Structure formats: C-alpha cells, structure tokens
Length: 294
Ligand code: ASP
Image (cartoon, rainbow, N blue to C red; front, side, top):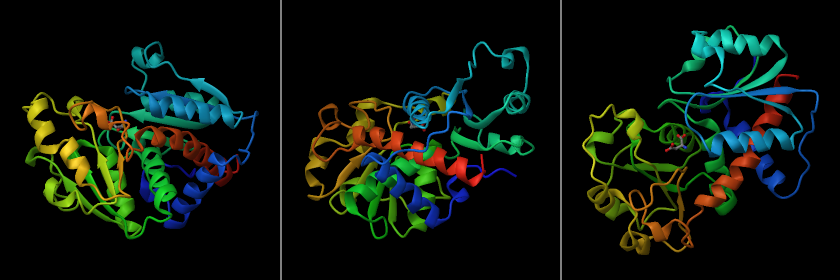
C-alpha cells in the first residue's frame, strides 16, 4: 500500500518534526528535490485558494509536472466515480494525487489505488497540510511545540483544522483549549473555556472561520453578536501576553472571527502561515516521493 498523508495519524511525532524542520530549511534557502520526470495530479472538489495554489507552487518548485484536474469539465459530470477518476490518473502515469473532497474520509474508498494520496482536506475530517504549516509557524516562533498553551476559537465541530491540530498538538505535549458557542462544541475534543478568562494565558490564539457551508441552514448566526462573544476584538487583543501569536487558516471573515484592523496586527502571523504553507508542502511532497520510492 502506498504511504499516504491523509490524516495526522499517518505521521509519527518524529516525522512531524522532520517535516517542520525541512520546511524551515527550505524557507532558509535549502534547495528542494528536483524531479522533472514525475507527474502529480491536483483534484480539488471543494473551493480552495491557499491549499490549491501553494501545492501548485510547491510542485513547480520541485520541478514536477502538474496536472490540474478540471472538476467542472471532467467525466465526473458524466457519472464517473472518484475511484475510477483517480485510477485513470494512476494508469496514465501520474505518481502522486493531491485531493480535496467534501466527503469526510473520502480516501477510504480509494484504498485499492496504487498511487500515494495527499489530502488537501476531507470535509469536516482533517487537513494535514494546514496543520503542518500551523505547527511549522508555532515552532518557528517558539522553538518548540511541547508545553505551548493553545486556544482554538470558532466552529470547532465543523472544522477539519481544529481536528487535525487538536490531535497532533496534544500528542506533542501542547495544551489545547477551545472557545466556541454551544452549537459548535465537539464533545470528542478537548474542553471548552471562557475566552475572556483564557486570553491572557495563551501562547497561541488560533481563530477559525464559521463553516457555514456545513450547517445545512440549521444554525442561526448573527455576525455582530458572534464577534462580540467569540471574535478577537481589540479589547481581547490587548490582553494577550507579549510573546503571544494570532493564527488563522484563512479565509478570514474580517469583522467576524477577528476585528478588521487586527488581521495584520503585530502579533498576527496569518499571512506568514500562508508563506510557510508553501514550504511545508514542498517538504510533504519530497517525503511522499522518498517514502514511496518514486
Ligand atoms: N481553509 C481552511 C480549510 O480548508 C479553513 C476554512 O476554510 O475555514 O479548512
């Protein structure tokens, strides 16, 4: 079976640190692997700006041949299954597939494939490459993950970013608390705390977008009251410790989960996360190539 990266459980703690360190090395100017003989397919069945394009840039930096699968003009619209689509790409010599799909654990139906998969997100399941860029950003700033005090704020229940980060951060010895309205609680994850009580204690304040696309119209939502109750307002920002950082996987809804003027505030690493994503995705692809002897 190919060595995939579809969830953080695919990686040992050591492998996580290897990817973080390699991402930082690449950021500091190390030369990436160059493999102009390999083809990689990007299949995005859900909206994406950062993940899709930073994977694409990462692939070009590794000199890979990139096939951007067109979901809207492909035979998926003629009823072809995801498995048959991926098998087709395997048969025409694609060596890696990067897939984002709205179905949680979509990759379970692809087990018979003989081509490594890198997930760009599976519905509300996991988002491993985002999680690795988050870890790289924390490690770059603090020089460690163990012992960090992290609060994740927002739509925890529907967020693949929250799930991936919770799993690995706790495994690596960080403390993770959540802040969210009752309707966004995920009881399988860590404890929910009061934002105004925790804010002054955290090293990392990670904000998440409300995942409206997964609510089926069932959640009553008001931007202003959400911002007052659960957003990073200027008052809350002022309570953060000196060295604390703000993170957000983006897209950001300014004025909802974070006040407009704080998106690029001194403590915000939101745009730096995007840069780190390009490097960590190169590291991921290098690892997939190596681990699968491609
Ligand atoms: N871009 C992230 C994701 O794909 C976060 C978000 O969409 O809110 O999960």
